[in-house]
Length: 439
Ligand SMILES: [Zn+2]
Image (cartoon, rainbow, N blue to C red; front, side, top):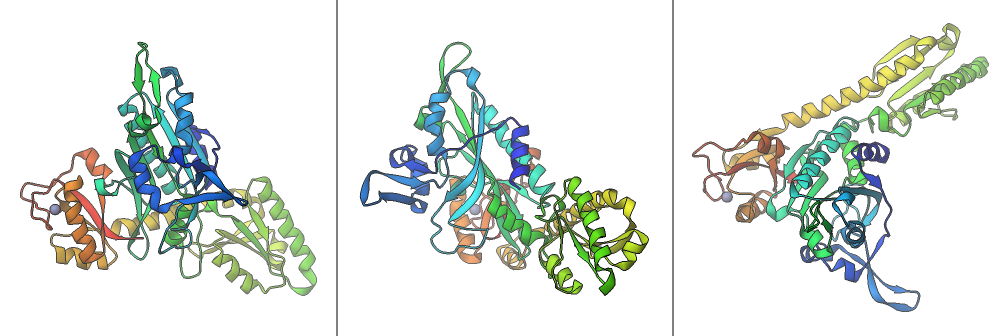
């Protein structure tokens, strides 16, 4: 999963870096809103051995304050821009109450990209590029349907001008926030003194963005979105094992069968696939069950008949269909089935996602639908701070949250018709927002 994301970032001109995991408190304190937003979640290192440190070190909750002091040294002239760097690693946040495996942990693994530009327009373009990268990887490769929302003002990243976040819907009808990209404007550049000399020799403030796909959370989302009652289902390209080979021996012919299995394994490994032969003592039926649960996309079943006829029986995890092919068609069939499987589970997930989007016209209707695992589009007064009170009301009454404006609607200029009202405060609606339960 990291590979796919990193390759995509590389393709769009980002470069990898590694920064320290700890941040001196004085760096951490520089941007006011950021400090305020993150302070309740920071783990501090206060001691080394028996000594109390002169300055506390934050275990990074995110790396703006680790990276930007150096950005202020690295960025001198317009020739140094754009600066587009990313790092892959862990961050730590004290999630007080409820942690959940993969979805909300006190340590999570992610990629964070931090970028610097000459103008606000370029920074805005970068947030668009980040959204495109999310669709290319999250949806095309991982098969996870998403919508990008502009988050309401009361729900943005601490220190950002705007936050744009992708949400998917889990099978239990709750939103899961996936990668978000933040337009930082010049907030951090001013705090960290990131300036450049422009083409005319004038000193200018820089503009920034940051983007943070949390791989552990995406992994959790991927498991939930694709799995079924028999266990995990992985998209072919990211399955830890893509093909499992199961010998089905009859006493005398074990050796032939194993040799044939190994021949197949060798061919597939040479093709670059991740393959496993299960030579354990378990019965074939138990092996089937085990590897299905683990989400291996394709299973090859090899018995006497297959060896004798130079054939291979293939089982697909998603549709549970079996087909017998000739040995010579092995390589082509694996490639074809892999692609078809990924497309199939992606389409299935997308269909379910699309079906769960609906509208509501009253608070009662909204309540009924969010309780029925739906995300609802409703007319809304404002995603500026003016709308926060209405959002609080929805939270109190329905335990649901306002996710923001759909970026596709912003692009198309879709706004409510005259006469449509926010049905919390009764004011004229300025936009549509999506509401639902969340993780
Ligand atoms: Zn309102």
